[in-house]
Image 1 (tube, helix red, strand yellow):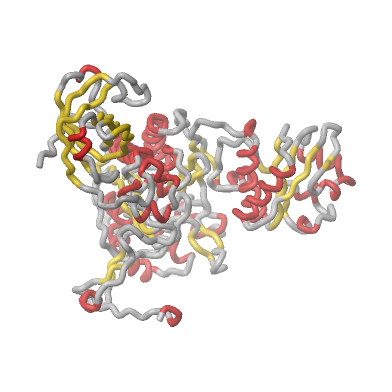
Image 2 (cartoon, rainbow, N blue to C red; image 1 turned 90 degrees about the vertical axis):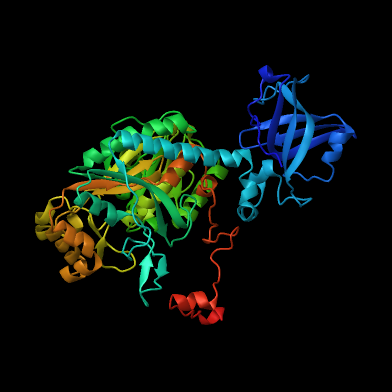
Length: 588
């Protein structure tokens, strides 16, 4: 069997006319004109070539061959009489002298038409992902991912970072999500965990004397899927720097990422250095979100005072946040859609009113504001033609709901939203601690290994809720790409930080033995960050779903329907790792 090709299906040009060639690929489709004339499209990874079948003998070789079979075609290149300017090979065609079937597709009907696979149901696409990936429009996203990963590596190495891989089998560690556990055969009753992130290992590398580390690291978290988060596993550009400050990390990221976004992105413009630095509290006050989309120029205003005692029930005793959109005259249908979308996303209602061309307050809740019209106009700086969106609740809730409303209003009002660009920013000065929504107790707000601003003095003398940490998030177009921090490298400060949330010194030593003891041998100040590669590629490609840029993604319920994972295992395998299955009663 001869498989060697002389050219790919995207290489042949007018200069190749008269040459004898061999091309290989998938039988994309054929337009059959008669029993001895047909136009076959052969497709490989690189592109397509038209093959003109002109004899009954060659046509007979294709008899009974289904689409998506793989073929080897040897023939002579000639100039096309009807050229196709849309194809790189559109000036030529191949007249076959021999056709070999290399791999036969035995199915007369496919689950979907390959070139239109993106129109198929997602469950079917995931089950037949190997066919889905044959679609050039799907394949190109995976090619793009490879190019971006290569560019990230190149630019990190130019900044003197060493690529170092860290273990996949490790110990369970409280990182904020559920672990994937791996039972140990040699140590009955004990488990490895797949790393939620290489956090401890990269800090130990800094303690080991490595100055700059990076890797495109696989991370594993047993959490639910979202549009911008794949369940199970994901990849991040993990990096750490010794003897570094927050600004050192910012400098590297601001140099590495924007050129990649501008080079490969759907949009060709990306923020230059330095990115805006916005404190967490300012972000919540101004944008109602700690991941603001800076392409939208709308901001929140505190309308609590001017709305107090207006008689509108949902505002009574609540914090009220307003968003003013000038020269915005949406239809009632558009307004209702925005309010409905806000409620779906935030779980809370949004309200509104307008200022008409005569300066009167109309629509929405305007009837409750007539007796204080001048006060409202003055407090919010309103002009004729303004639209006002409103949200109410406890301060944090009102701000977060208004942040969602801001996004929908910005998307609906073209004058207030930049297009065709990537807008980066840093969110800084996160609180070190917060009161947990579920526990009602003091918890770490972000990364427990972060250095508190003010060090030991802050931990000893400040209210924990007033302590800020050297923590930062990288945000692009309203998407959080990464969290990072200046690390707490001092064991005394680390112990005190954990004591505040009720974890004593012995517990810290037991949970983080390697890191605690390593820091006792003289650790350098160090800082790092880990932008999500999947999210970066999703933004760069302009895709709404992260599954479009992952070669073999799981579905929304963390199942690999193509491979049948997760799957049952036999009893012997369970005995080998000392596991007994006890199912919930409803599953028995």
